[in-house]
Image 1 (cartoon, rainbow, N blue to C red):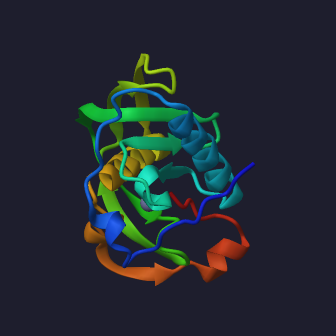
Image 2: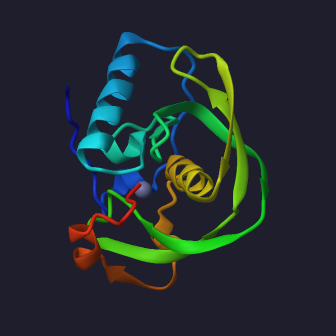
Length: 163
Ligand code: ZN
């Protein structure tokens, strides 16, 4: 198990666009394993490569249904709308209200560079949108309605979903 340092808001790397992955390498496999370890250790539901300082189009997500690994992911369908609290491992202790599609379909590659299609509703749809935004250098804080709020109280009850 190897944990990577999670970059926090204000770090320039979080505002940069990520490059596509052309081929899987031992180094990228190690990155993906470390991203999963780091996400679970931080009790997040998602993590994007730039959050650990790597500008590659890789995200990992687990909303409680097992790990999803997505390489070069793109949203190909979206519909509906959900409004809810969102947090981010790169913005510790904060959350804000973000409107997202309620249903998305994402196409990309898995860790073996095989095509995958992931369909998500509610929290998974939110997590997919949030992580894919990271690959474009977009933080959820740019999309928050109103102000960010502190999650200190909720954190003790472990009700926050940081991504
Ligand atoms: Zn995030």
